[in-house]
Image (tube, rainbow, N blue to C red; front, side):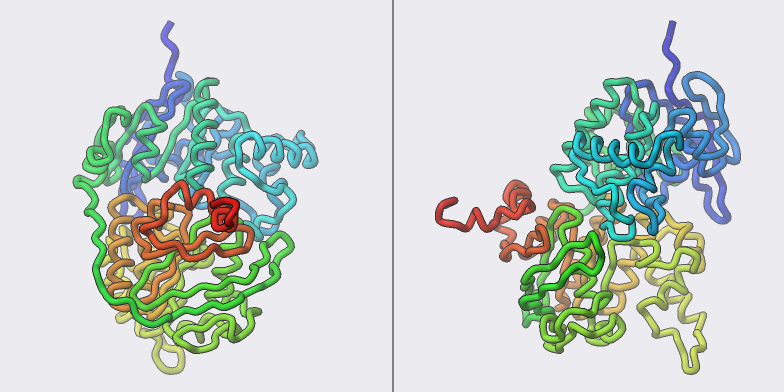
Amino acid sequence: MTTPARLELQGITKQYPGVLANDRVSLTVQPGEIHAVLGENGAGKSTLMKIIYGAVQPDAGEMRFDGQRVRIHSPQQARQLGVAMVFQHFSLFDSLTVAENVWLGLDKAMPLAQVQRRIGEVAAAYGLPLDARRPVHSLSVGEMQRVEIIRALLASPRLLILDEPTSVLTPQAVEKLFATLRQLAAQGCSILYISHKLHEIRALCSACTVMRGGKVAGVCDPRQESNASLSRMMIGAEPPALEQRPHAIGQPVLQVRGLSLPAAAAFGVDLQDISLDVHAGEVVGIAGISGNGQSELLAALSGEDTRAPQAAIRIADQPAGHLAPGKRRALGLHFVPEERLGRGAVPELGLAHNLLLTRREAAGPLGWLRMGQLTAQAQAIMNRFGVKAASPHTPARALSGGNLQKFIMGREMDARPRLFIAAQPTWGVDVGAAAQIHDALLTLAASGCAVLVFSEELDELLALCNRLHVIARGCLSPSLPRSQASVERVGAWMSGLWEAEASPAAA
């Protein structure tokens, strides 16, 4: 007797105003199979996953689960069937603890104290360190992603959907996650894996469905493909090679000296004697495992946290430690936070109105808005960065994660900053768009802007940066020139081992 497919989709269609997100999509996933869904931003991947999970209802098509025809009307019904999903945009309540958030998605018969113990056990077993007592609002993006992954694993799913699960994980954490996923697959769990990282798909998955413009463009075994061939299937071309632009390095635009700050939140990280320079025309990277002080340092640099001594942070040679974000923008600082929705953009506002968060050119006297100018400005950014949206007035929450990231990056780059700070600049962005963002960052540096990039993508930092630092437990490593950096060396420094490497005994 033939074992039925774990999941079978036939002719799934979903239409939004002005956008055909899914156009007669068919997909088959076998029991114990790790199946990739690959496509550029806006190809319809996340919509399809939300349909499977019951968060979105299709307009047409049929779904079968273990051979039985089903129509999943809600995530609760999906969980009862054995479907779990890790969203790219997290579905967590900021005011609740990690344990409370996980408990909400599980059988309520399990006491909260038991959930807290189970989180600790799963976190230790899978190498995803997490304190179940912490409130979610105190977590970094990478730690929030761990919460989502652990919550899904605790549900013992028969079908696990992962939407960009490694976008803010370190290479070491990715390897541990892959070992977990292979173990789950060996036990019969089917996995739908969405990622823009082609090397991950080739290393992990045994089948791949490629989507383009809402349609299925092809099905393949990614183990038999190259990065180039997968890229051609996905975007119709290979991403352009990144070209460094030789140019002069100027004077320091950002100077940080002896910055020490106690954590503002109960579970935060203390910053300890941070010193850092970023010169005009150079790209400097900050690497590190999520939760080691990146959020605290970003808040101090952007003006979200104004407790730093005034002289500890200088922007364009002006003391800025106490300055609010608006006054730092007046000095030439533009900043892209790691959280797209909520900090980078207001979900309910259209793209044009979201420009007003950091750009005021279209704001006239007495508070009147020049809507024509605002709309044209938003449209120009959409055109330059290839943002797929129905119009400049499309709400930010309606965009895919990658398209919203491109818009936010474009909004800040278009302001011609003297100092540009970006956290996770290509989080959830497809290979073509990532290459475009990388090229724009290098163009910005070549024009004389000082660029500081926080990223957990080591390959990204090694490709972009003139030099980089590593942050661990609130301390910053010495500057490391790109010529001396490697994935292995930076990975070791993420555990704070740069001091041991520099000591005579280690030598």
